[in-house]
Length: 243
Image 1: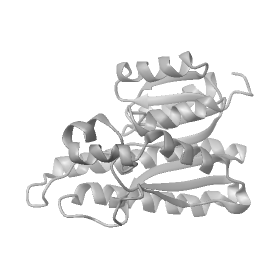
Image 2: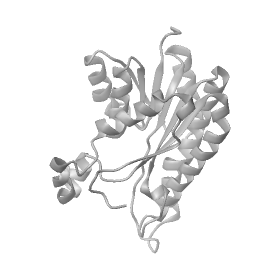
Image 3: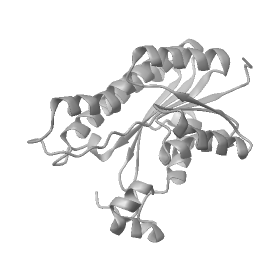
């Protein structure tokens, strides 16, 4: 391991926001370590970062499993470098009426969007606390502020991850670890929005949906903030969004 190798770890590096965040940190010289449950889906992101002159590693890892998380963090810290920036970006936005929601799906959504944030956030925080520095960023949503009809499971998980972030920020801030929660309020430029909500996607030309690259710029800004002016909660939304 080279001590000058700074790692940015993105848990949930999908084709949109997570991938954009990884690319943004890689452009700044960080080694982007990215995870999804399937390594094959990560290869285009890793190859793209390397093609642009950056460094990246992809890992197949299930953030809901304690043993997977422990192995992931140990491997990165031992073989690649210290994790200086950590981003938890698992979504699990699955709508369902409370009259039809199943216990199994409710629990799975909580596992993915909340419990996994605890497992990964705690594992990284232990390493950062020992070094006395680091940034931990959680991707939140409007559902973390208010629960909408049909989103009981997602809202419960996102309320939980926001509360986790608050507790961690208060405890870890005095240890020189910046913890922040980013509320992404609005549709993001993704294939899912394009295919499922074409009328919303049509607003792209008017800056009416969120550009993942611009979201990533804000994550980088949070990481680079001086500690005399740290932000805990940052909300991002298009100028046309009602809120």
